[in-house]
Image (cartoon, rainbow, N blue to C red; front, side, top):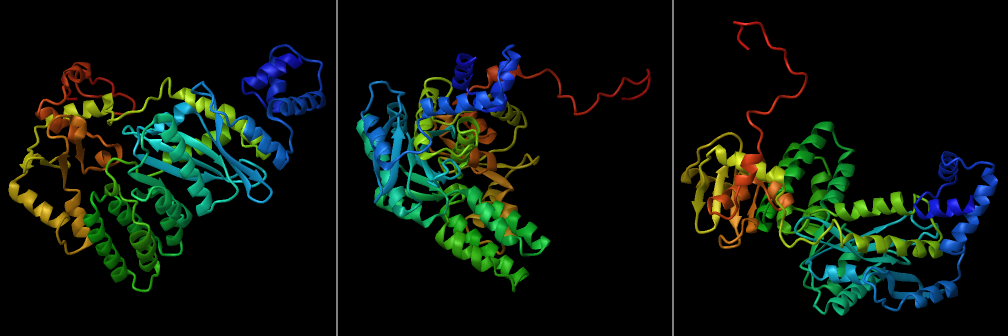
Length: 472
């Protein structure tokens, strides 16, 4: 029985009731839950180490695992500083994760709790590619969430990436929540990097502050903030933000929300709109998802002692590293899947008018309208990039047409970006692909052949055929 329990434990079945059910399903009985619990306790100690660990024992474990292994996917301790005076600082990674990071210019950073019962935060830093995939790079069990801790982790990541890859690692942007400790650390380690602020955190904080306001104000402000987030350049954001603030102050002169929003998310933490960096995700959703996966798949939402946790982290980091050799590959350009290719092909069939301005700007109408004139484009540019009279007027014009900008001198369809919501958030959309196809940069022939014959059936139960001579 005990050998079967060990096999099940290695396969990920680690809870007593789950193990008991698995044993019974295999026809193994005659044991008590007390026996199973006692064996499981001994097995955990054997696999993960003792439940309690001293500073000396943890420091010795880190020293033993600090030698860089030959295997690319073997987790090792990149840096450690463990003592009663300095606290706990253990940073881990693999050579493959570090080498992969050298390809990216976008870094994501976040901390999570509820992983160790000692209360130590776990800080994870990673990178993303042009397909918006997140790749973890370093995993740190730190003493606290201070600028010194964040700075230490970022500095050790930079050093390790450069050592493994042989390349200089200077990211273009670092995306994180609005913590000032993170901002300070970024300015010290990556002084040239832009400081992006996670849109999800900004949205959640604004909604929390709005709860004290009326329902009408909540609905209007939420919609306005969502529209503001889709600004595609800094000048446009600065202009639109002031218009939105003026609107709120006129509608609700006694509310403190406009002053709060201006101070927090316009003046101090303004890097949350899409145009802040057109080739970087505006959220930390990939990293947040990884944090959830750690709790669901690795710790099973059980708070582990720090000694056991770093041992469990070894296998977890190894799995992240091995993932890079299979289904998840780093992408240098956005990926157009079949769905968006099909939409682009169907969009071309509408034969909408495209107005070109200069060498690399193209404008098309949004919605069902097909026609577009140069005068309408001039009015649009004047309104969304000039001086509109109100925020609502700005929004009406902003979403009346889309601008496709060619940044690749007509050499690659993926070098075109569009101001529509999908284009800003996913780096590729039907409009940019359609414009690219007009210059022969992409071929939709295979997509066209794969399209279903006739129109798509509507949702719901299909209607029965009516009797002869009746119109249907």
